[in-house]
Amino acid sequence: MAKKLMKGNEALAEAAIRAGVKGYFGYPITPQSELLEYLSRELPQRGGAFLQAESEVAAINMVYGAAGVGERVMTSTSSPGFSLMQEGISYIACAELPCLLVNVMRGGPGLGTIQPSQGDYFQAVKGGGHGDYKLPVLAPNSVQEMAEFVYDGFDLADKYRNPVLILSDGALGQMMEAVEFPDYDVEAHKVDHSDWATRGRRKGHDHNVITSLYIQPDKMELINQHLQEKYRLIEANEVRFESIMTEDADYLLVAFGLSSRVAHKSVEMAREKGLKAGLLRPITLFPFPSEILSQLADQVSGMLVVEMNTGQMVEDVRLAVSGKVPVQFYGRQGGMIPQPDAILHEIEKYYEEHFAAEVN
Amino acid sequence: MTQLFPEKTDDPYLYLAGDESYKCELIEEMNQVWRRPDSLIDTPMHYCPGCGHSIAHRLLMEVVEELDIVERTVGIAPVGCAVFAYNYLNVDMQEAAHGRAPAVATGIKRVLPDRILFTYQGDGDLAAIGTAETIHAVNRGEKIVIVFINNGIYGMTGGQMAPTTLAGAKTSTTIFGRDPSVHGHPLRIAEMIAPLPGAYYVTRQAVNTANHVRKTKKALLKAFQYQIDNVDGTCFVEIVSNCPSGWKMTPLESNELLEDEIFQFYKLGDLKLPGKE
Image 1 (cartoon, each protein chain N blue to C red):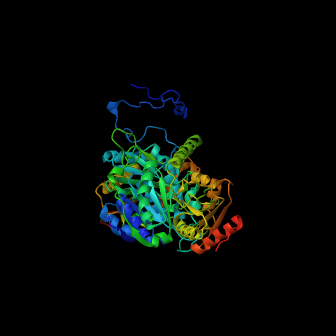
Image 2 (image 1 turned 45 degrees about the horizontal axis):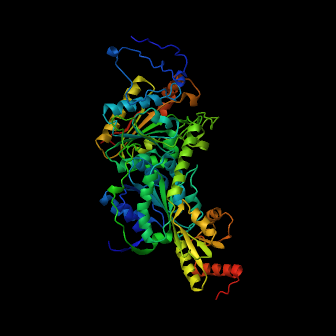
Image 3 (image 1 turned 90 degrees about the vertical axis):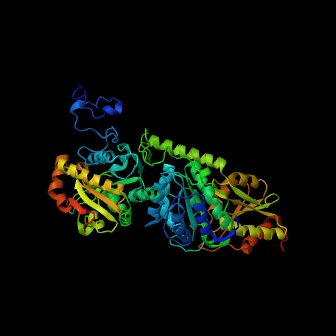
């Protein structure tokens, strides 16, 4: 299939239709509204239901209902809207309903700004709502991945009966790049959910019930333990990351999403100067690529985490590295994007201090 | 002939010990004129004695059986006393977050339009925290039945003021009585939504007398039949009910209060009928 020039938000929306989405429920918010607009136009003609909800609160609960009948459903929003959805996501996670969520992050806290940010990392990977739960989190860094991760996201959701989050940002949502949609057979990827889905009581069966309420504490503890077992399984099977120039690296940058693209550029610039920097890019933020980071900590002498926030993923990197090497942080916030020069400067500073290197 | 009453009927906790002798045959089959609907699960309910919920539950299951839609029906339970409705209603059920049942039902109906959807909600759920979802679901004319149990109090949490609590009524958060200038006015939500173009059928009923129970069943039959007929709009059945525990009175006293005061404010009858304004 030929490549097409598309906005990230639109590529994601198109991929959702191609992945067989049967219901989309959302609310307008910059910088993700193109997703809503694209699906309002395309989805009803291509076999799915589109509904603009009265709020993000309603939208996520529509997703809860529709996910509960076992169909592929999704919502998308941006940071303040994602905060509003947290209660519903907690219910969905506990009731183990498969669905796809998209957060096209903007700068916060509060109403913040409509410019790109990665300030929702904690909210995305540590649960976000009340109680102990996790979402597999996929972090694209290109328009191509905005599309590709939709298929992966739906498949993961169906496989683990769990909501899956695509954590993007305003720049990836708005930028235009060439995108090629992979061949994907919706029917071949269909999972039979009829044993638990509430599609109307099956003949000869008792009713199906979807709930997150287990009033007896011993039962609720079992539910918690079951969820944790599932998350351990996801950690064992679904870690995804990209290694860039790490084979001979003695200094490692760690960055995800948009900031990984800038960090990549900085690593290339450092290499031109003879500095052996590398980049580890987590693609799944949960499960986090802790093992590879721990291995790389035995190889490099230090790490630099680059984020568009005040330092969130850096905590997970430090946990993974467990004190083996110093882990520094460089970040921009509030909608500002780190510049390659500024990151390069941090790299040079490190080499000057730790290797007494002459950096031109 | 089975015995009229089982032994030890005075022990309300028999069932906890797995002793099912409380389930007795009261009458011979040939003389039976009424029986529990099959879809009403045969288990003791958690509702307080005298509470209207159990009657509303039974009516719902009678209706889905009479209309032969048990296998097409999906119900949404609220947060509140009816949070465990799915323990009694043997149709597919989802338990919604507080106030969000109309949104949950909307999600299902939009994806599976041939299913019959109902929400079952109390006044705190539907008329306080879920006001937005209620109004917008009705305004979109979602093809669902909303069953609204209005007993003017938060029963599950211990008897706090509800949006529908009458002025002057004492609750655990209005111990000197609801003062509208401080606590706001009681909300007649059926009157609010009846004028919406998306509302197809809006009615207010009760279950405190045999006559009212019959009328409520007729209203529910009508509402579900409209949905089966795929009419263009939402059906809203309010049931003004009692809460003896929350109102701190006996079931009989609570029924008297309904007749003497509450029906004066929440007038029973149809608020909107198809084809009539």
